[in-house]
Amino acid sequence: MPADEFIVTPWHVEGEIDYDKLIKQFGTEKITVELLKKIEKITGESHFMLRRGIFFSHRDLGALLDDYSKGKKFFLYTGRGPSGHTHIGHLVPWVFAKWLQEKFDTTLYFQLTDDEKFFAKEGLTLEETKLFAYENALDFIALGFNPEKTKIIINTQNIKTLYPIAAQVAKKINFSNTKAVFGFKNETNIGMIFYTALQSAPCFIEDRQVLIPLGVDQDPHFRITRDVAPRIGKPKPSLIHNIMIPALTGPGGKMSASEEAGTIYTTDAPEVVKKKINKYAFSGGQPTVEEHRKIGGNPDIDVPYQYLRIFFEPDDKKLKTIYDDYKSGKMLTGELKAILIDKVNAFLGEHQKKREKAKSQLEKFLFEDK
Ligand code: TRP
Picture 1: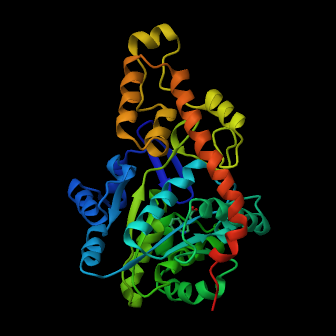
Picture 2: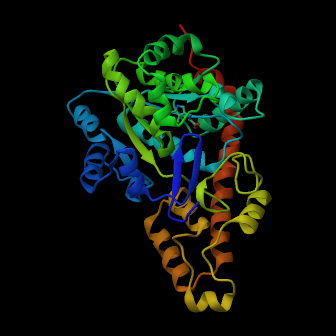
Picture 3: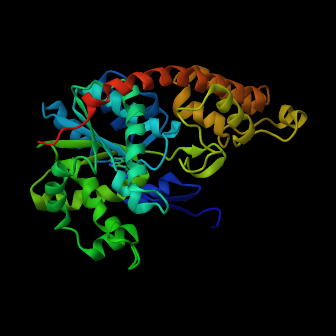
């Protein structure tokens, strides 16, 4: 694919994404300084993921916030396709969802789409995707959600609740519609074709507005939901999109749970994290120390730096020092990697303990069909 081209769909992300172009392509809106101020005014805080443009785009977020200011509450919804173990990139929208939940005091639904990943992936059984759903749920719970306000929906397990809503949605989507949005072919299995109705369903699980924090690749599903909503007498969901998290091995494409080497899993041991980062992390440094000292590195393409920016170094001052030192050549690639290794291992050390505890909490989080 030519260097200036990219593809973003729910099942395939490729190339180096130009996010301004993507906003135009998808027809979403950029998060403006004014909108950031509005969020800050309500929450009393500036979240680094907003400040740094990790969440960069939205649909109808302004209107939702205005309604909220007038006393109209909303709920939150996000999800994960359980195709493998959780990796650190997955945590980005979840951590942000937790912040939103705390600031806006809302319920949150987390959908695990074991059916979707079974339909979409060759070689994964439904039994396996279901097991991954429960595995992924532990990582979600480990982030510290309140079980009173947070419910995990697993598609194959909660179909009794989902199906009547999905049926309402499905009746309003026709085949050419879905082909146009997702590029389905005659060879596409019909599970995939129906699936979008199930991803829509949690949007209407409560009788109020919903806000969905999500990776921008998932936007096409909710473009359909937003078309359908008024036709079934429901409010259109509002969305806030995050950028795709780069794979450890380099720019272009998202971190994929199926590519072992380029992926840091939440269950990785400290030595494994160290090895993966040192061996595989795509670097913006120069080939020799001499050159690096002279020309300096490029933090904008350097994956360790990007991971610090996206997740692991919330302190702007510290991040800027790293940026400047790396760019000037004062900081070497090995030193930058060492900073990330320490941060990731400190985070995962805690996370893995909480993940163990989550096993006994799981029951409390699982959505119960009525
Ligand atoms: N399809 C998503 C994925 O593959 C999972 C998902 C379901 C989701 N519902 C969602 C993601 C709502 C974001 C928001 O990861």
